[in-house]
Image 1: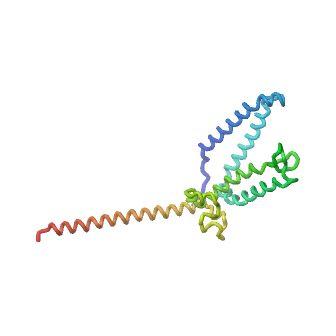
Image 2: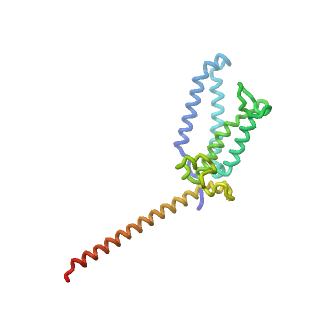
Image 3: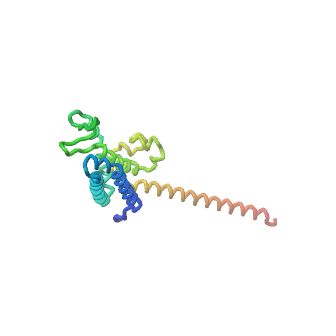
Amino acid sequence: MSEHKGLPDLVIFIITLALLSLGIVMVFSASSVTAYHELGDAYYYLKRQSLWAVIGLVALVICMNIDYHLWAKLAGPLIVASLIALTVVLVPGIGITISGSRRWLGVGIARVQPSEFAKLSMVIFLAAYLSASPDRVKSVVRGIFVGFDGDDRIGSSEPWVARCHVKKPAIKYKRKRKLRFSCVINAARSTRASRSSGLGVIQAGNSPS
């Protein structure tokens, strides 16, 4: 079956733009006076935030054109890399301390905060993990504790990415629907047969001897 690219979810896209715009307005409202007194430019933080918003929109457009199956393949490595980066931050001499908090990595003015990448990695990992079996969301234990849900696919020799393919749950649900449909048909046939046999007995009893 051939796959083709569909249209983006306009509702989510519009909500994202609305939240982005609201955030920029709130930043300007909260920082204009401070920026004017300290930097002499009331629009300093507004221009800075707007620049990052444009960069984020460009990244959004790029990610929209990437096949989401690629993110499922990268889910495992991304979450592992994020955990390593979060641990390295705590190592003295490597993690950069700012305002009493050691949350940054980098050299000179080039600095990154691993927790921001960890947020994105967690979203991608959970999406790939739950897409392997949507039934996990019905149970707290199976949905939260990865690898302790009793699923024989977890920890098997099959590649983890292959287990995250979205078509497997669909096949599972189709089989369930087919089984339920066949049960309904068999029940209807049994009811019809019992009614026919009962009608035959009544007609035989009412027939003249």
